[in-house]
Length: 205
Image (cartoon, helix red, strand yellow):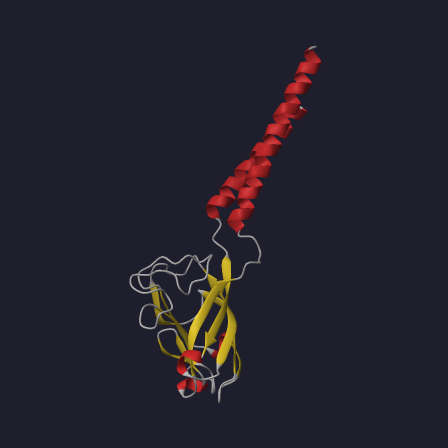
């Protein structure tokens, strides 16, 4: 009787994890960002992070001057080396964003800048886009051309996006956790069946 109960519990656990695996959404992915003014003959630069819910991110596809939420869940950018508009700007400082894969499905697990699209690589000005816009915060950087962020509300130094790279460390995706749970449940199920078989053989010997 105990073997039957153990078998039923293990089977129930597997069923639960299978259901969860079918229901969970992909995780939020955090990317490290970098811009440089070198291409435009200035010393401005910016670094930051952005977290995106990839279940809401059009890929392939585009977002044109839409509010950051709910796709963007976190954002921080620090500008330095510019003649004006230096400082740290957070998600609440920006009103809208642009995202355009230029017809390609980008690999979100790899460096996005340089990935092939329908034309030149993603990150090439004029083909695709990633940009941020602030309409109310003095001194914030704003998009002035595809992949180009300009300091001080667009009146300062221009900087080209040079890196859009996923962070390697982070919390496992729910899907991965569910798959691990399914594997553990199956191992428990097999182990319980083997144990019960051995007990029955011992009892009949």
